[in-house]
Image 1 (cartoon, rainbow, N blue to C red):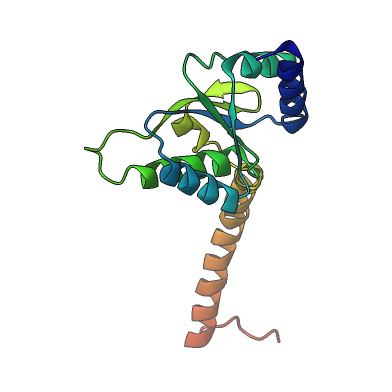
Image 2: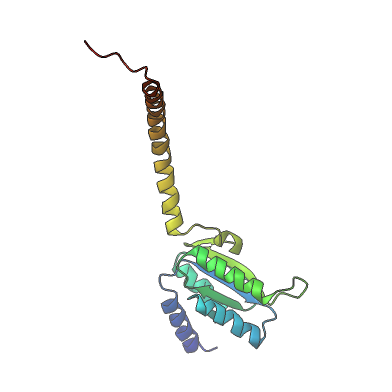
Amino acid sequence: MSKKIKELELNDLRKALKGVRDCVLLQPLKLDSAADYTLRKQLRDKKIRVKMVKNTLVKKVFAENGVIVDPGSGPTLLCWGADSPKALGTAVKDVLKALRPDPKLPEKVKEKTGVADGTLVSLEELSKIPTKQEAIGGIVAAILGPGAQLAAAIAGPGGSLAGVLKAIEDKGGGAPAAG
């Protein structure tokens, strides 16, 4: 590959990955054209982009973005573009399962690594990272939990006392009239 073509590829990859903090690197092993089409179509339906890239270009672009990635050897498929790291990880994981319905069959695509907010993680960890809404919900629940318990503790004895007074009043043993 000539230097000029390599520079054009590098600039295109820089433009495509500008601001991307979450992605998955895959290695195609025995990927035929039908499986490649299925992989790309299913990910495209989930708004995830897929691109075959050279390992040296991946290293350069990620180093410029502050992430040290070692894509290893062999071809690399780069997947990015979901709403959250969890959506990306789950979608890629589901597509990989669909490509290999029988565990006895050889793998068609193998996971290399995942990147979540600039940190290297496995695909399994990437699919477990909570979304922004889930994280906010967890924080709100943690804040409101003790308040709800305190309100219940304050209201509990008062409700019991009111019930006892109501039962006494219903029996006719109410307070004598002032005379």
